[in-house]
Image: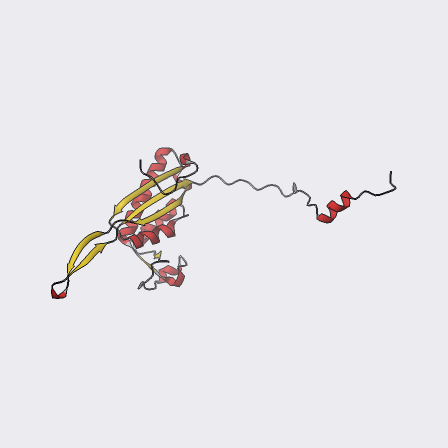
Length: 187
């Protein structure tokens, strides 16, 4: 059994999926996971399909060096309209989401009510290659793979609000003091 970084309170209402040493950029995976966390699963999968079709963008919030502005980033209120279309990472992340949904359906959970409760991306050990530089030198040529883990949670049905007419009377400090005060001479 594989350890996840978070264990859910009610394991029966959750479904998990993870991938290790995935050959996709860690920074791209981190931005996708950050954006989709808290979303409904169907909404997230649809958004990732739009990213693969270049109809929507993934907003980049943390790793923004050298990333240009995109008009599509205004739709998801990205700070500074900074975003990209990380195609390979979006495809891998979408496949992990679909795997988690399949795991949830195996458990008997309703796919319509699933929400991404936990999405985390960690750096994996870099894949090391070499590149040949000028004057006979050799430089490093490393890839930055990622570990991704996703936990879906079934959203509970909403509880109805209490009736307004059954509102309790609020007792102020002055009213409480008046009740404590005993009137002298009355029988």
